Length: 75
Image (cartoon, rainbow, N blue to C red):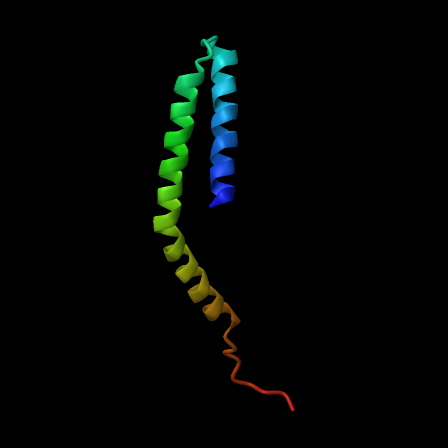
């Protein structure tokens, strides 16, 4: 959860800085903070909803690939 919020903050910060530099926009701190808080909130909710699905599918795939399906045995 912390990693996703940090990544969201860094990505939005870089995006906002590039928009200011490339498009010569004015820096608005209040609007930027609102955007950051909304993005962090929505990304956190998405991760809370989707993470169990990703975890279950990862466990299933691990079970499939680590299962020994070799019929021949060497003695």
